[in-house]
Image 1 (cartoon, rainbow over the protein chains, first blue to last red):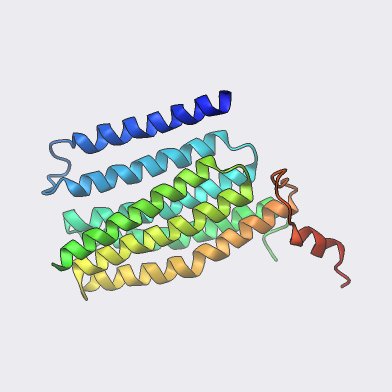
Image 2: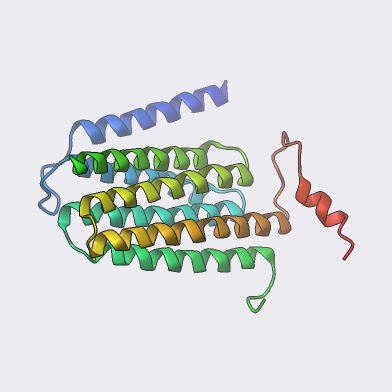
Amino acid sequence: MNRRLRWVLGLLTLIALFSVLISRPPASLLEWQSTSLMRFFYVLLICCVLCLYRILRGPTPADRIVAIDILGILVIGFCAVLGIPTGRPWYIDIGIAWALQSFIGTIALAKYLEGKGFEE
Amino acid sequence: MIEIVGYIFIAIGLMFDLFGCLGLVRLPDVYNRLQASTKCVTLGTCSILFGLFLFRGFTATGIKALLCIVFLILTSPVAAHAIARGAHISGVKLWDKSICDKYEEDKHTDTR
């Protein structure tokens, strides 16, 4: 009973988030022309909220490290979506740099989890 | 016309991202969460970057987007494998309904 109640509550929360964010886009953010790109942006924000939930409530450190890895990949998606309407060419540079840095950080955290030193 | 195809690619990538993060919240185990979220989010972000390439064409931004796809495909499975190995060595339990653990058997039967 408790599990089914929680399932229904989570589903209702997701439906409420989608209905609010998709039905009423804001007027203007960075003077963007189209509104569909803003909706794309908000779907990515919902993904980041789910990752933050797992970071806050992960029972083991491995859960938190997985969520941090996923958050680092989502930031590259943010950079790609931001690069389309603004027309700035340097957002994708941030994306490439973030990909390499996130990979190095995740490898270091996995080595820490494994209990070995960094010199191996 | 090519912009419509780019929008379709970005929408598919966002769907993959969303379902991957939903699996990160809903699944019961570290390893299940890892295999659900890492593959889905990597493929979704690659699809978003390919949509950006379709928008920009063969300019500097488009080529950088393709380069970013190559970096993601090379680095993300390595990171996921390192996390899974570290979690197993540090003693994270499997889900109690999991039936197969080959890495544990390999650790006990290693004769080197």
